[in-house]
Image (cartoon, rainbow, N blue to C red; front, top):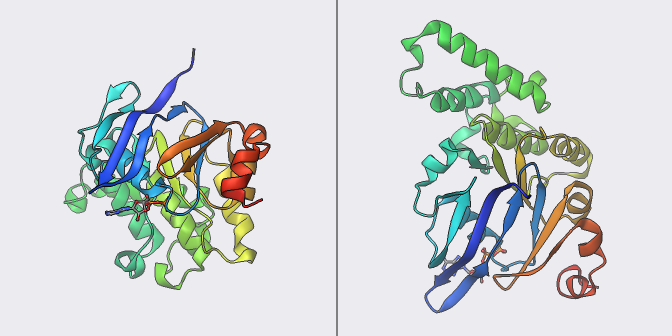
Amino acid sequence: MSDLVLETRGLKRNFGAFVATNDVSLKVERGARHALIGPNGAGKTTLINLLTGVIPPSEGQVFLEGDDITSLASFKRVKRGLTRTFQINQLFNGFTPLETVTLAIAERNGIGHNLWSSIAGYGQIVEEAAELLARFGLASIMGERTVILPYGKQRLLEIALAFASKPRVLLLDEPAAGVPEDERHEVLSIVSDLPKDVTVLLIEHDMDLVFSFASRISVLVAGAVFAEGSVSEISADARVKAVYLGE
Ligand code: ADP
């Protein structure tokens, strides 16, 4: 029997008369490396916003480990293990990776408002942050200001930051987008080696990454699931090639 960790049923989202997401029923199995692909405007971002609770659906439901979370606030979804990567912005630029991840872990532990309440606890959190950063290839630069880091390292920091919330399902949003060629290999290899107990839903344009990473692929076109299958099924699907790969 399949073990679904994340599921949508008949998910629909209108913007006025425009249907951005239309009757999407997605099944993500535990431990999967599930890729969501589709041309620009296909509705990928809208679907992620529906999954994370940034916007409510017009119709349909979202289930996390069998529980209906359709009406659950975003931060409560994160607490339950559904996390997405966020693009690092100016907010983080003045901080170091160590400071950023330390704050995120403190927040997860519910002491973000009063880090100094327990010096021993604070030390432990800094240690955990350093270990997490090392896992993502950021040990040597964890004391640098984020603004001066190479772009690939900034993208890896986004993933480390998402991991600070101890996700069970990670929505990974184009991890290699904009990363220069000489840094891509490191980002791709760290993405490939993400811990297997975390289920990953990857939104990605780079087909090399999708085909090397995914265990299952859903293709979204005009808001609806157009095709779904394994890497070999999708890469051999002439309809997908025609609409998406431009062949
Ligand atoms: P993708 O991420 O696959 O490129 P999006 O989910 O961003 O696609 O967009 C899907 C469609 O929904 C696009 O045509 C976009 O213009 C439209 N759309 C997205 N958000 C809004 C919004 N807030 N208001 C109106 N239209 C929107």
